Image (cartoon, rainbow, N blue to C red; front, side, top):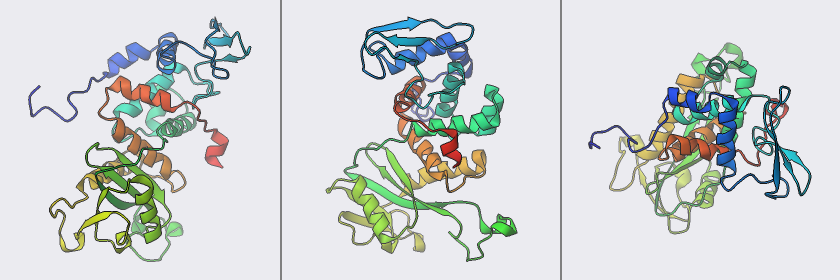
Length: 314
């Protein structure tokens, strides 16, 4: 492959036409989900027995039901996952996984509504459930890491008069997000925080790094005194790189997050911001994988998680 080939050119992708052919009917989608969830053969979600009997789909019941001969319980490939009790077909779930894996700036609920032929309400719930699949604890980083914070939210001047806080400019009315990037692995971890104060930033660094980690940040005073080797750059005087000290990698991640915010979602409530942060973190960390491997990663991340609509809007 030529050296000037586009980024991540080594990955094997799936075209939209191939995705429709692969997941266009429920039988094909069912087989794909079963193989990804149980690569060693179907097993009971309750007792993990492999003595399983299959009850074929019927006119009333579109999805095959599996029966455990040991604990006598019935289950489907959706049971015990983020798809639990969903009335959406498996082909639509598979296509939603495909769209979320291949759109770097995210997929709006309105686009899902149009592309999948479902209501916007169902699409919004579907999207948030997919975001839950990326909500996994990451291993501690080591070596060299970049740490930076950003603020997400609309500008005060653009808000309706009833929404303005009238408490100043800059970060007023925005939500703080702290993030870290491992320079060697390129992996990112990020989380929404209430305050970007010293205690919060130090706790974040300690919780996500080993003791021998070297941390690079900007000159914010809240970072000073952390129990890690630490070097800074002074953005306030136009310094963005000094020797090995810079936060360019983390700022690139913030750029992608904010492109999704302004270009795809347009508005993200503070209540659900952590879900969108999970989405962009998870998609970034799985980008080196082939498209189908990214989708399989979502299937594994869907296990043991549920997000009921009533809880989502509570």
